[in-house]
Image (cartoon, rainbow, N blue to C red; front, top):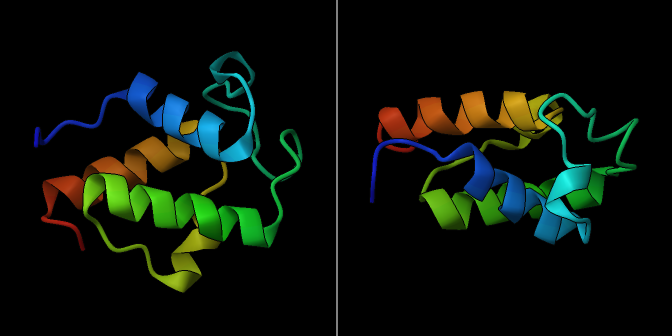
Length: 84
């Protein structure tokens, strides 16, 4: 697995989990306010991120998954540090 997290792969994963087209998941769209993501859906997104990138997202970190750009930054940092 590469140490880099491709933004478009991440966008596709999130769009699939949210049942949206990738075009609807803009870099700065707020998941809660713009894409109607509730806490259960946010947890499901976190689980998919953990599986795909072999990382651990703590429960308290889930609330910080607010946009594609933020998720990309968090996932990249975790991949670069070995998943924690």
